[in-house]
Amino acid sequence: MEITFHLNDIEHAAAWFLKHTSATRCFTFSGEMGAGKTTFISAVCKALGAKDNFSSPTFSIINEYESSVHGVIHHIDLYRLKGTKEVISAGVEDSLFSGNYCFVEWPERTPDIFPDNTISCFLYVLDADTRKLKLIM
Image 1 (tube, rainbow, N blue to C red):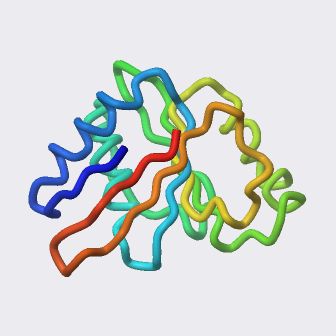
Image 2: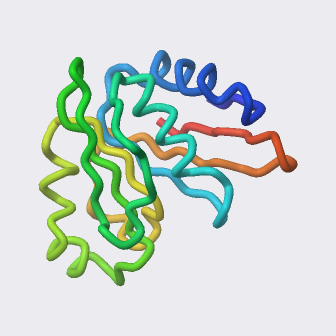
């Protein structure tokens, strides 16, 4: 399943994403550096009702946002971590298996840690203003 969208219409893409993934809470996001993973995840968090200041969790590893409707939303970036042992030490498993929404960037760092029903999302740059999001369910 996939959608192509312009960055100025990212809210529509976020709504489409939530409509087609409503039964799932854990998602991985892969794509080249600068593809817009954090930007897309921020749009999804806004669509879920979070009103925080969204930023990349590259250095903090895990950012938590609060939604009045959905509770805590976890945004995780595994880019700086090297393997499953570091991921577990950082407390990522607690977020993954919390039952809350969880969005993970750079899952390639430790592909064996995710819950069975995790949806893999791939973000592709088509041009400066256009992206394609492909979901593997």
